Image (cartoon, rainbow, N blue to C red; front, side, top):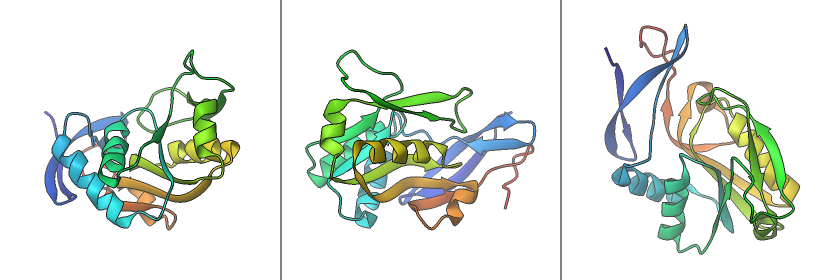
Length: 186
């Protein structure tokens, strides 16, 4: 039987399905893909809280609609996506390793020279859908620093588990982790 966690995000109620990630731990899956309403509302709310920046940066994949919408609403003409694999058109590729709570295996993130040029010396705002362990965030920070960017903020729609206690991120709502029975952990 499927279990759900109901919460309000950017003024909208959503039911997030719980998924087992270990014998004793479940997460509530927040999926932006296909939910235009929540993407638009979350983008607007994050922009209200965002520090001044020159360019928005995220990792491929789930937060792509979010940074697109933030850029569109703010009138930005560019945003950067750290790719999960190098592409043929990418030159002088920088990479870093990442271990995300929602991905079974270790991954890499990549940016190429065009992205490096867009980041170098610029104020970069990192945006993600959910910050949990902070592994993806750390990997993005590493790429930006290698490229010579200046990180001015780190934002997410949701801060999962202990991430809500971090003082270096801006987020809209906390999201608990859940025990094997689906009860929120404190």
